[in-house]
Length: 209
Image (cartoon, rainbow, N blue to C red; front, side, top):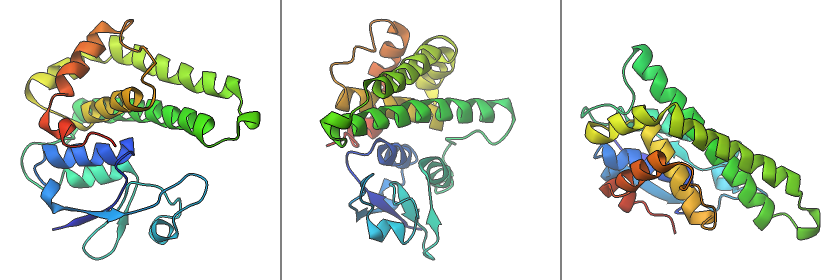
C-alpha cells in the first residue's frame, strides 16, 4: 500500500500528514509528489485531482484522490495496526476530532495572515483583516491552554492522537512564519507541552523549510 502525496515542505497541513505517517511508522509508504501549490495561481497538476489545487492532496493505489488533511490523516491511521490516531468511538473520538478542528482553524487563520502580508500588494493590505485573524489564533491558543491542556498533557505521556499532532503543527507554523509572535508567555502550560512534543522524532523529521 502506497500513498502518493502532493508535497510542500513548508506546508503545515502537509507536515501534519507526515507527522501522522511517522507516528504510525508508515512514512516509507508515502511517496512525495512535487507540486507548485499556490493560493493565487493553482497548480494544474493538483487541480486535476483536487479542484481546490491545495496541498495536501493524496492519491490511492487506484488513483482515487483524498483531501483535505483531516481526511488524509484518518486514512494514514488505517495504514498500520499499531495504535490509533483517532479513537474508534465514543466521547474520546469526538474530543480528538474537536481538538484537531480547533488547531486547524487556528492554522488556517495563520495562513491567511501569511498570505495577506506576503502575497497581497502592500497598498491593498487590510490591517483589520490581519488583526482579526490573529485574534482567532489567540483565542484558539487560549482555549488550548485552559479547556484542552489536560487532554494534550495526558496524551503526551503515553499516546499521540490526531488532535495533538494538529496542535503541534499549528504551533510549529507560528514559530516558523511568525517568529516575533510571543504566544508562550501567557500560555505556560501549552508552551511546556509543545516543548516536549516538538522533540518527538516525528516532529524533528518534518521540520519545515
